[in-house]
Image 1 (cartoon, rainbow, N blue to C red):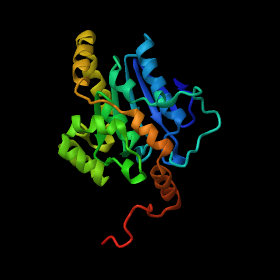
Image 2 (image 1 turned 180 degrees about the horizontal axis):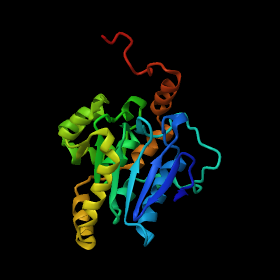
Image 3 (image 1 turned 45 degrees about the horizontal axis):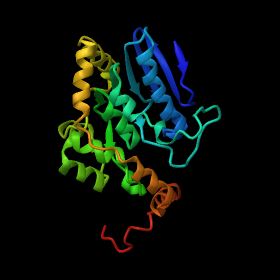
Image 4 (image 1 turned 90 degrees about the vertical axis):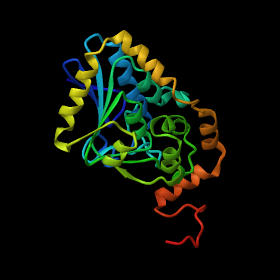
Length: 259
């Protein structure tokens, strides 16, 4: 059974008590529109309120899990987003605090908002073909969720490295540094994601909720005010996104930087 989530490029499939939220926008390489971000949040809400569902698995299609938001600002006809919702559109906290288990089945390229989805999931099962990156500073975006969450996952030193260099890491390194927890053969990704969901569902729900609450206390303050303020008034995000769209270097890179 396939259901809509108010976003073109996103669909919900039911497999018994398991819901699959599939990111499927190949024409834009699975770049997430505002409606898709909110649709993922709707999927989390659904598995927590529908008595026939017990867990959610989020995955992508092709060789891309999710590369983050659509920097071109594009949307799709038929997308549905509440008016004036602001940063409440983002699904990361909802994923992190979900009482129903949330699994990320990372099938390929995973970065920006896509990597935050994987990090906030209870278990991230990654294909051995997956790659990971935190590219926000390349676009002039002071991302508040990463600043709070990344040190809790990988430590301050590695968080500085990933945030300030914006380098790409493969699945093996991502697992080694604690960015994600499981790496599997690409052909076994679906089966291993289902197995992860089954394992969590064997644990007691009330006790699990208490443990998750205590784990979540390790995250720092998410300063969305600074982040969204910069997006509104700083010239850097506009220059970073324009440079990306025009396939050129942003103007803050020194012209004589050694190669």
